[in-house]
Image (tube, rainbow over all chains, first blue to last red; front, side):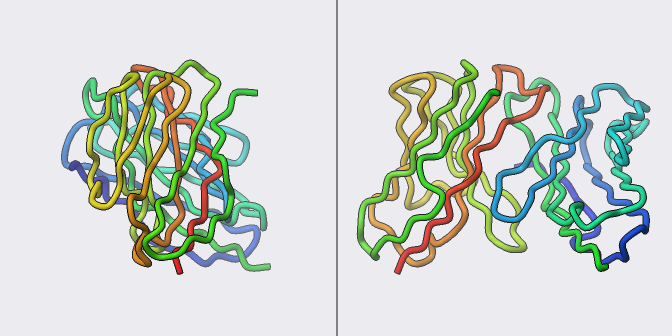
Length: 111
Length: 113
C-alpha cells in the first residue's frame, strides 16, 4: 500500500526542549492527522488538518499541512514528561475510505 | 463519551488455540479496522470492513479472519494461534469518510505461548 515516511524514528530530549517531527509522501493527501499513543494504550487524535498551508495549534502542539499537500509536521514546545509516547502521522489519500499511517516517532523526555 | 471497546486488555493463549478478539463501537461508524502493532513496525492493517457482513483483506491477513454480523461489532479471529502472532492488537472505527480520523480502542496485548 501507500507509504508515509515519518522521521525521526525516535527522539531523546531534555524536559523543556522543543520537538519537531515530520511526515512526507510521494502522493497528495487531502487530510493530515496527528495521533499520540501513550504506553499500553491506543492512539488518540491530537490535531486534524484539512487545507494546504493550514497551521493549527492545540496547546503546546502545532501542526502544519504542507503547501505541496505531500507533507506535514508536528512541533511540541517546552516538552514535559507526559509528552512521552509514540506519535503517528496519518493521511487520507484522495477520497479513500482508509487512512495511511506513518511508522511512528518514539519520544522520550529526560528529566 | 464515544468509545471503541476491546473486550480484553491482556490475553495469554496456547499455540494452536482458536482466539477471538472482540471490538465494539458506539458511534454508529460504518468503517472498522483491525491492526497489529509490533516494535519498529508501526501499525499494520490486518482486515477492515465498510459494512455489515463485508470484509476486506489488509496488508497482513494471513492467519487471521474476521466477522462483522452487526454494525457495531467487529471480531478478529486467530484460527490457530502461533507464537509469531504475539502482538498488540488495535481496533479502530470511523465514519464512511474518515476525514475526521479513526477512533481507536485501548488495545489487546496477546501473548501466545
